[in-house]
Length: 452
Image 1 (tube, helix red, strand yellow):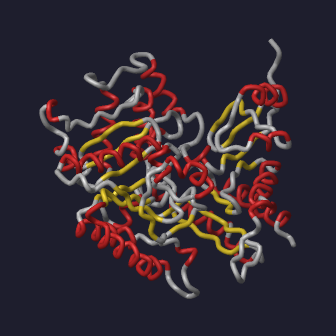
Image 2: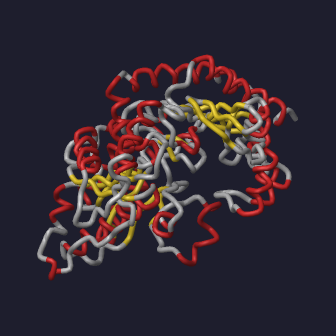
């Protein structure tokens, strides 16, 4: 058998694969990088080159690649039960995972519904909220409120309640129409205005919208603290506190999409904790399995659960399903991931690592084409602009962010820009030396690409 190498495998790839979130013509210039193995924060290709995974392989990997504890848990499960239908059947990994998530999440979230991925979890929450109001005799509640610049996935319901035009605009004729309100995005704050004051001020639009539309609204859906796919824009926890109060006053559900920010990314296990709130629906995925297998959950309250609990003939049941719902292998990976949180002070170490990322990038803010360096926990973003004083972005066609990340790859660091925003979201096992290497590769790339 012919030995594999990068060029050969990339050529085979381009004959048969269609990659996600990719203009495939780009690969005429820059072929996909075949990865042979991973260990810790490092990936290795077939030619022996290594790459530091600075984005946790699309934000999913928490404790590094090929972690021995998660490996062992999945292997043990594989030897007994790989999958069984979860309708009418159950298994220990699903039950134990549900119990542990109920114990870890904000008090009152007592019911766990399994799904396959983040978009599917959002679909579940949207449908469940709508169906709840219908079962409670309020069928006029059919709409959702969302934030500008939000992103909740790319299935049609999740796409509809997002607001990033790059993903949404083409499919707009297929989508339901949400009510969109200004984001609390603190990049937009006035000079000298604090994050808290800006987020409080921006809440006025949400309050006004709820007051006007509450009778027709099922739920408000937000990404707590960080709008990740929306260019890593961030806001203050006070907005969530005010939103929870307003949703209660107006009789509207609150859906917290913590798919990207859950499990320690923002400095607490769940971002909602920083506002001291409990959503009506909490969507989790990505880091849930430590980056091993697709799995998602929606946690909700007994009040919501009871609205569906009745004789079958009433047709009140929530008849939503996925073939791999509650897959035992995924549940076992998730349980092993939670074990790692319990075994050491992961959140405390994350806070130290986040501060180190901030120190390593402090000088970025002095660059004439860096408008802002912002951080929330283990997420740090660098916003590149053409004109710093006016905060005028580069023409998007120039793809400056892509150029920076291409240079970083040459230095052995895997980055993937959001437009002209360079961000770091590394696995939690990264070291301070590796953070220095990661940030230096980005800094050198910024100097080379934004030197006019």
